[in-house]
Image 1 (tube, one colour):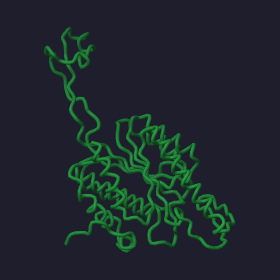
Image 2 (image 1 turned 90 degrees about the vertical axis):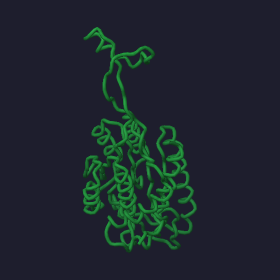
Image 3 (image 1 turned 45 degrees about the horizontal axis):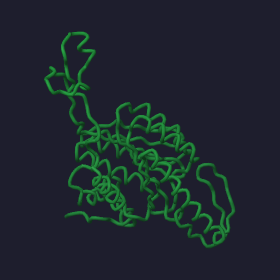
Image 4 (image 1 turned 45 degrees about the vertical axis):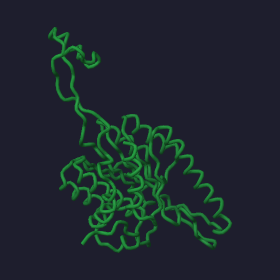
Length: 297
């Protein structure tokens, strides 16, 4: 029995097990994606061969000439197995809403697991990192389909806790990933903007391609609260009293400005910024983004 193309969030939340949720979402990803949206942006050294008239002199290895007094040319081949790193924010704020069908972490984990399923099906090497104030768990990149279970195990066993420090986490990951790769980062960006940008710049300095998924709950996006209420920061326990109706317009405007600023600032570094609200079907989110990516290849 085929899976439906797009499963709505409430139906998805009723599915037991991250692995099955990921497969349901991935089924929607396969529709319309006729080739991998991840492959083919880097090259690998293959071997030397003797220089032949007409070869590009820029490919001549002059060190080899100095040693042997003979001309050799470096040959390269396209790297078909991209290193694809999934980075999922597991700080306390990602546990919102604590009484909802899916928390932000559940939603982000589903996006990440579905992306892993798709990439592993196309023999790309996929790794995973969870982070909060720093890197928590790391699963090194592998291309075996059996590797999907290792990724699921970490995501299923991760509890949301601690504060967010994107700079500390991304700077560490940049050091651990010397080879160029594609990083998909799933976070609510509950951190100081300067620290966020510094961390992304550190990662971008390694020539990595970056997709940043800004994951917000629908209530955080639209602020539907109608009465005066007390709000508590899930990471610092700081409390603030707010008159919902009077505060809503300024909140929505400030959030819209924050998103515009991130889009402009990250665009200057060729980092893709993808805002996501958790009431949108995850497959729709990934198909929309990957379809655009595929069209540019």
